[in-house]
Image (cartoon, rainbow, N blue to C red):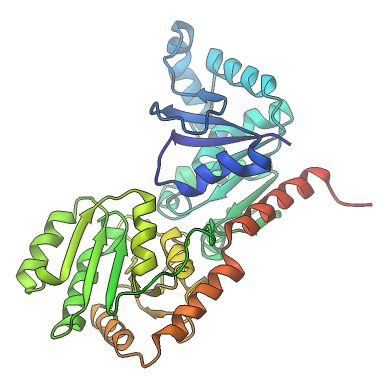
Length: 380
């Protein structure tokens, strides 16, 4: 079976879940449909770039195609004219059996064309597409119109499926399959006592300043150390805050690092801090890959009751959870973690959770099974 992976930008190193599908789904028998290609092509798959320069004809057709798409289908993003014909020819030439759209917004682009060509289309909901996007009545309308065109949909968390359902976006063939983690590569190493790690873009949704303030409260008078991996608009404010709080010597800001470097940090870290919150624009996590990677490495997660995180982190068993924006509670949880008489118990449970529920080999097989069973239809 051959799958076309539809994504926005290709190749994005941080999108490990999409890259894993491109490299390994159905034994790597894949091709790629992307909005734009950035020139980095490590997988050497057949590639179609949707946003290539328009033909003269398509330039003239563009405003009419956008208007008709918005009126009839709730989206102005449908391929049209010469570009649509070229994409259809690509899918035929590649003998594609199924299209997997990474993010619901990408499914809007390809669902109708897939139907017209008789190619089943699935979408994978991951976070922003099933949270912030739902603030738009037009986007909700387009999602609802898309549902009959999909063969099925997958989400990284039940939270996102429930969020979609609250907006009337439902599909009878819906499944929860987390992104997963390579548990053979993400493994516990020698843990540094009282070491903490936070990974991710320094943006509102990750609340790095809350994490920093809470750590400063819990760590004062201890040998604890916090490493932040990631860049973004809140990086410099966080550096300044660490100095103001008097903990600059207990906090390291690395900026963005390659995935292998993140893995090395996780292997040696005792506690993983992620104070995820719902952003003002409604943006949420799905089920953060970083949480799953931390569990696999036996880094005890201290996080929030946010999106799909409670589907992975169970307080008292494999980690700690507090409510969003509860800085005092987060500080108390960090302090409690520092004082654990047997942190190895939670670390082992964290690793066991990853092995039981988030091994990406098992989850990839589950995704393939869902697709194959759907296309095969009900057994007689």
